[in-house]
Each structure stands twice: as structure tokens, then as C-alpha cells.
Image (cartoon, rainbow, N blue to C red):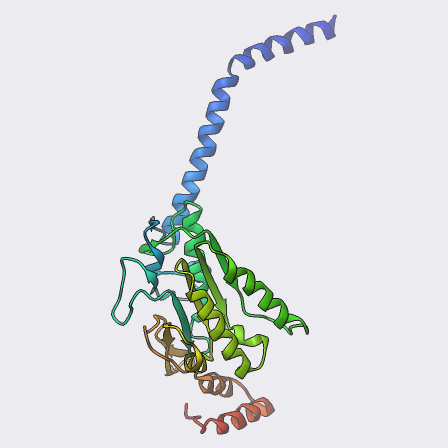
Amino acid sequence: EYALRRYKILREMALKLHELRSAVEEAVKALLDFDLFFAVGRFAKDYFLNVPTLSEEYVGIGFINGRNLFLRELELKNKTKVIPVNYVVGDIPIQPPNTNKERIVVLSGANSGGKTTLLNLIAQIVILAQMGLPVPAEEVYMCPFDEIYLFSRSRGIMDAGAFEATLKNFAKVITSPKKKLVLVDELEAITEPGAAAKVIAGILELLYTNKNTCAIFISHLAEEVMKVVKVPIRVDGIEASGLDENLNLIVNRNPIYNYLARSTPELIVERLYHLSKGSEREVYEKLLEEFGGRKSK
């Protein structure tokens, strides 16, 4: 008798709850939608995101006051200060002085000057835009790309087949007829400098033949590449001018268009010299002497 009574009570409750099922499902969906839009809104507010302008008529990407998301995250934790940057590649409405709608660009300049950070920022903007999300820049003009390639710099020792494997990967990229963005960080690491400059120049020439391709190559061999490349490309530079009182690089993070910048490795050596002691300092002192020596601090 107790079990029967319990069953009837539970059945009545279930029937009443069933009547509310549609209302509950709608409420849950509304809450999930709110949670999504609220999260995107908070993300946009905290990371200075804005809606980009996309058009099939463009071939390239350009932005004003972009902020790398990873650096902005550190800034929110008071660990760094983000300097907004501007950059343009390709045929888009933004065309700063010393640019002429170049689709193929080599980015030169200072060690630790922000070249890789800029490359990653471009990738962040393009990926977020094509996901339908706001992007980390005040203004962005870009085309939708069918393919996006990011060749990151090697962090370790490459195996014996790295050069061959890299060339095979680039062959697939080059032969694809689709609209694409190619981002490459220090390809010269795969072989010796003289051959690397020729390889980079050849790849740039082949990418140039596809009118729907945009490419940005970070390289310390920009000068050598320019001597052998046979198509019109642009070389931009991020320049370092010295060290401040805290031994940080004094550098303009915004690339200078149509400008070949030096790598300035001597500034990094000088910084390490001042931050080290004992026998390690002697090592950096010897290296500094090879650059002409500059140790006053």
C-alpha cells in the first residue's frame, strides 16, 4: 500500500512537471544564449575587440591598433604593457605611405623586437574574423581566406629530414589555387644561410604568381633575399635603437614600411652582459668585443 501511494504521488508530480517541459527547455536555451553572448561581450570589452570589415573584393589584411591576445592577457595581470600596432599587406582600403598594395612581404628587424608577436596577432585576427567573432584591433579590413598557413619557428633541434619535409609542405601551399594567407617565421633555420636566402626568394616568387595569395615572411636574411628575388616584394622593418635604464630594448613595435631593419643582436648580448656575473659575464664581454664593445651602464 505504501509503495502504491508513493508511485501515485510521483506520477502526479511527473505529469505536472511534464506540462512545464517546454517552458523549461526555452528557459535553458535562453540562458545558454545569454551566457554565450555575455562571454563574447566580456571578451570583447576586456581585450579591446571590434567587428572587422570583410569583403571578397579585398585581397589582404590591414588593421589599426591591434593588440596580441596573449600580451593583453599578461597586461590584465599587470605583467606587461601592450603597445598597439598597425600593419597592412595586400589590396585593402588602408594604404599607408610607402606601401603599394604589395601582397608579398618580408619582415626584418630586431631580435626580440616583436616580429613573431605581430605574426601571431595577424593569425589571431584572421581566425577570429572568419569564426564570426570580433577581433583584437580598432579597425580591420580583410578578405575571407580559403586557406591560412602558419609556419612557426622551430624551438628545438631539427631532424635530418626537416629541410625536405618543409619543401614538401611549401609545394602543397604554392600549388593550391585558393585564396590564402601564408605566415612564415624564420624559414632560414632549415638550412645554411646562403642556400636559405635562395630558397626563400624562390618560394616568394612562386607565391607571387597567385594573385589571390598574401604572404608575410619573417627573416634575418631580408637583405640577401632582396638581392636574388626576381619579383616586386616589400621589405618592412622593426628597428631597435638601444637599451633603456632597465636594460629593455628601445624599439618601435610598429613596422616601418619599405625599410630594411638590422637584427641588432649586439643589444641582446649587451643586455645579457649587464644582467650576468662572474664567468658568464666574461663570455658576454668577449662577444661584445666582437661587435665593437659597448658596456657603459
